[in-house]
Length: 402
Image (cartoon, rainbow, N blue to C red; front, side):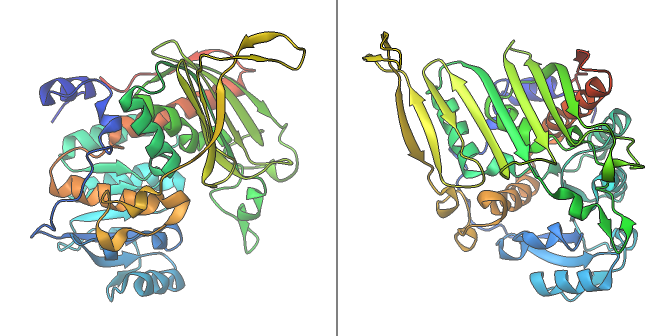
């Protein structure tokens, strides 16, 4: 199954970029399948925040965590009586068709590959991997396995992103000539240590966790990030000392160039006087859309208008129309099975991720955030961090679509 993304699109009769737009607007729900996907859920924190037990075509067969208290939490959450003390043992269960890997980020590549080799479909938390070598290994494992792989990127299914995908598909933006995204998570260092011992988060380079930003552009337009210059802030002081990533930066800002020659600014910030935010901006020739900070419902929409106005210096100019925009609550619609039409984690995204993964398996198709999209979300951040370590040197981003 050595199939490039470009060949896959051609052979499927799809237009370029359509993989990133498939969830809207025709993502209606078919009747429940006779076949049920039997899933194993691994990871008792993030893994306990999804809705597999509510999906009409899914059964939670087993759960797993290294800690008994978290295994018990998973069992209670999903009404599941079967549990395993490790992923390795869970993968030996022949009844399990698929796994959701909500495990630490440095384990994602190894856990994904092991699960695929065991013959399981894989939904994995972000990011796809931690370095370029692992990224290549995951891609090869997915293509060799013939199994469904999906990355559980929440930004792709935020209510504002779903709206942006719809507007883009309808042509309302015109050309999106620039975009920006930011992920602010100040105070994250409280998770760097647990009972005095460092966790996997200790010193994690901000750009090694880029997908909550890169998805804002890539999932909407299908563009690829081709070049980057990145600047970091920090000099390895305080809690950054002796981190396993040898990362000196608290915050990183990257300036990307896309394959359509568009600029895209990305900020990932762990420290500072910042509002928590996971937000994007799309700036188009006919319309622009600015998400609010946090997961609020009201954004700003700007549209071109044939009217004159005056700026604050009294100069006359053509004036755009600026207005508040309230996103539809897409989780209330037929995009989801009836039982799943409720708000969920990360701005309503968890139910959409759950549904897309299960339906992709049953329909034997690639999910929206397939391995090529996951690589496009993840790889630019890895290269951006290398740029920051080299004083902002402009670096090319490898192409994994072939």
